[in-house]
Image (cartoon, rainbow, N blue to C red; front, side):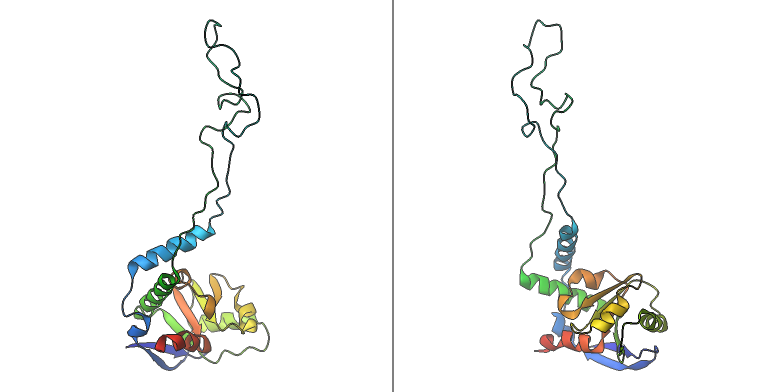
Amino acid sequence: MIEVTVYNPDGTSAGTIEVEEAWFGGEVHAEALRLAVRRHEGRQRVGTAATKSRSMKRGSGRKIFRQKHTGRARMGTIRNPVRRGGGATFAKRRRDSAVRMPRKLRRRALDSALLARLRDEEVLVLDGLDLKEPKTREVARVFEALGMDRSCVLVIQPGDEVLYKSARNLPRTRVRRVADLNAYDVLWPARLVFTRPAFEAMLEPRKT
């Protein structure tokens, strides 16, 4: 059993929420986490760098002059990489660095990441943060009260646009909707902060 501390916006404790490790698979699957990180980082790479090899360059394929008895170095076509305007020797190709993962393995990686952060007591639950309009200053004040001086991922409910707009400009802070959470988002920050509705929404399908 893991107890997750719930905090008020002023930084005081508002109780705890008990979480069963079995809801997250009971163990941390290191290989699934490794693949999830590789998949995320691979999807960030564009991979569009490309150059033309000698077969892609325009120009004749005829030998410029005969091989011997000219007093000059042997030479092939004008598309030779040695000549100006010729093709590249080791031409770059467009490449896809994405790593494919089945949906169940992605879910297992997310559960393993959450379980690891819960065990290390690096997950906080924030209760009572109700903003009428976007105010970045208010969210910054709450994070200061919680001692959030390092990187942070704030997990919110899908419909909470006011809180999303309030927190997205904070330095070293990423805002994620609970349905869009992935293993890399859980592993990246120093602290993972859930709003209470988002935390309960995250636990609901895992209890069954």
